[in-house]
Image (cartoon, rainbow, N blue to C red; front, side, top):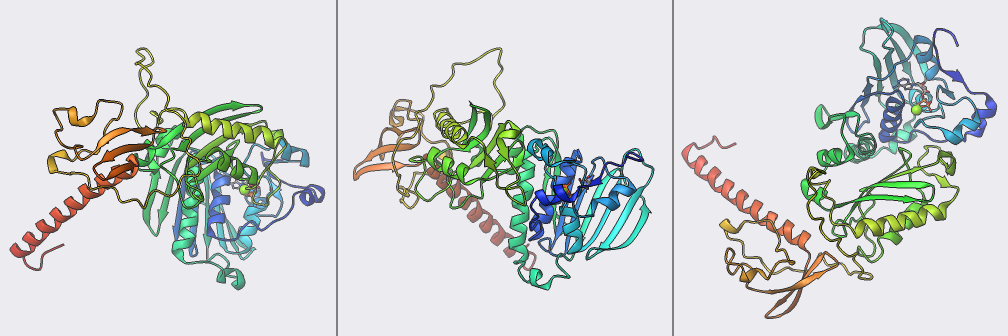
Length: 464
Ligand code: ADP
Ligand code: MG
């Protein structure tokens, strides 16, 4: 090693062992590779900027360790990596990247530039590449770290360019990738700017709970349950959605193995099994799952983009995941996702755990027409009745609010069973809560409309 340079080209033997694959298939995969590189470079701040769904411009800037001039030139060679030296290293690879393929692939199908500076260097190096051909290498002024600019992706591969979808579709993939890394590295500050508009600005130094709160609505976080389960050779942590939070697709499932986003058919089937009977058939749970396991027990080299993994002892992990989900579901809703931790010095009485929900193959209940709740302005409470208390009609402070029914109890900590003059009603408190909020917002909208009309009568033509 000369001048502290750290990159070397892998031998053919090693390169051939690592199956070559299609690394870049759309703008989101460029964002993925560049964010991974920034994380591997120890960055604490990562800025992602895209224009036109990433089809025109993708810029990723980090404050990581940067590269020397020689390394910057080597980085864009195929199979050039600083992350592994030999095929045996793949077994225990700790970085997100290791194939040394991404930069070479991206630079060969775009107008690409990289500007990089190590903290110890006085100046930065800028390398400009057009469709894989180096155009210029020059000194530049830039803060420590690295900035990649990728313009006109696939400009020289028309067949590929044709397969790009609308800016909106490409953007939704980019957003998904951004959230994957935002969730797995809450300690790092991250921003996502879309067409010069900032979509996310996430401060660094966060815990997982904080980051969830920054990304999602309070209503969403209220429905999360904390998962913390130690199984043979693995430790599972994270949050899973209560049965009220099911989805039509898997877009709210984030699974990480040793900090790396991962999927595997076994994990999908274990999730299905863990949530069987808890959510309606054909729906998908909300999952933020972090699996820590001995690196040698998981093979990350199955898939070219390292997304799909294979396990040495799949049944142990499967059992742990199912058991972990059941255990988390038996806990009360996660207090840490909604409010600050209680003072450990003065522990309050802990609430009794709610029983796991056990109805088999629950039918889709969202289409049920809930009876209209009496919603007077002074009763705009968003709280649902607490069924553990005496029946509300006996309470003097809310006379008649629930007089239209008699509350019989709650099933599995979820559905409230009510008796009315016409028969039995099952109420999903989560959906009912949304309805109460909806009516309250609609009232505000109608009110605002009235104000605007009054305003337009006073100052015609000046309505915003
Ligand atoms: P890999 O990440 O698999 O090693 P890449 O083609 O993504 O392959 O990157 C090649 C090399 O370039 C990396 O091994 C690393 O040494 C260097 N590199 C890439 N991105 C950065 C960055 N943002 N900061 C510092 N070094 C980087
Ligand atoms: Mg990489």
